[in-house]
Image (cartoon, rainbow, N blue to C red; front, side, top):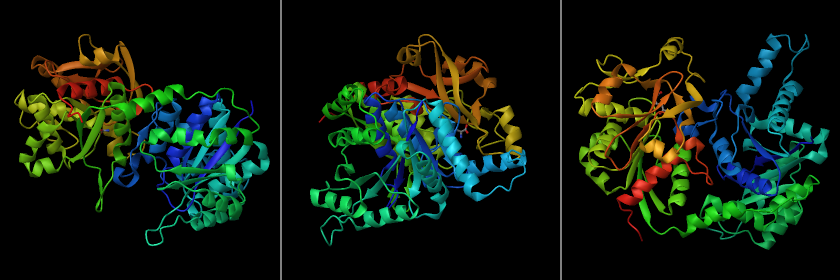
Length: 545
Ligand code: GLN
């Protein structure tokens, strides 16, 4: 089978949605009847994204096989509607690690191992392996950062080598940005021209330029870029800011982007159907009633800015479920620390139709989270607790229903007499040795659901499989006591007997999951727990328009 590769690189500046553009293009290529996979290359030295601060890096997305990756992998999974595994994600650290291990094992048979070509060759081998494993007709390879940065030079070199070896099966797209400086009032193409020149100096000529902008690109601008960058006008693709990121595939379709990419590979569309996708975007547009959802976390602030990037999959999963339930969502990002400093603020939470506590680590803000769980439990506010959010629900129940005032997770209080959430035995040894990277309980595990629970009602299945990322667990030593006090154990890992889901009886919706359901929600198959949560929020009121 012949594999085709489209490299996507960034110019001008980062953060303009290279991942979303790539994923949206992937969706439209797939809709034309081709098998598509996507690879993300991050130029940093970290072996994976797992050890990075979420405020700095954004969400750590977990694959089914337990890799801690960049959030773009999540974007690809959602648009391509497929599971992506660890071979599709690489960093400088990971590539060098393989090269060095191979050298230590005499894999280079005594030869002097050099940065060029041995490092780009490892990159190429990984790209080809991912394409082969996915049996992909087209593999999208997104190189993180922007051209001209020192750290992605070896990846660009790998791409250039692939092109020169097999020119008919390798193409390049540059994602650029066209600013409209307010003082000038005109859309400027010069930064894009410079970015193309920089790419040229790496020996690469783009076949496509994807032009991100806040206003639509006009014909004169398009022609200018085509002329000065030697790219056919039809391959200058406008990507104006969209109201919803789900509209981007259609924006590309109107410009026949996927057709042109296929044509570049000598392929023709086999079919042309975005019907199901369009039905989804229509549902998003047409929803009338609005539900108010609060997400309480702490990884928001950078300087004066609030970013929700650390919770991107949660945000997307809420949107998928909202479309499914025919509502719009108004999401408020709540800083859990504020509920510790001003307990009076808790009253304001009664105005929400649903509250969600996503994954988290460490002591900052945890008492605020526990207080939020308390108000949800007592005032019947729909609650979805994810990972730390589930652990907080267990702590809250032990403190306020069982009366163990010092109940805690040993992550925060290692001396507590009531460690209702405790570190797993095998984790202890790793922590003692400072082995933090890639050592949590990661990836997909089975969970058996109990009859008569909300989880069972929404999942409909007996056994489910969900992705994990944590070191601490519900402590089985307190299980019977908590059950006797009314806590419902709705899901258990059958092999290790670990509690995976807790619920409350006689509550509109109160579910805490040790796993991360958000990683498996897709626009066209919204996640059952998010559907249940939004459904309950809708019943609570939803303000309407
Ligand atoms: N800090 C908790 C743990 O490690 C929860 C992790 C999470 O929420 N992803 O178990």
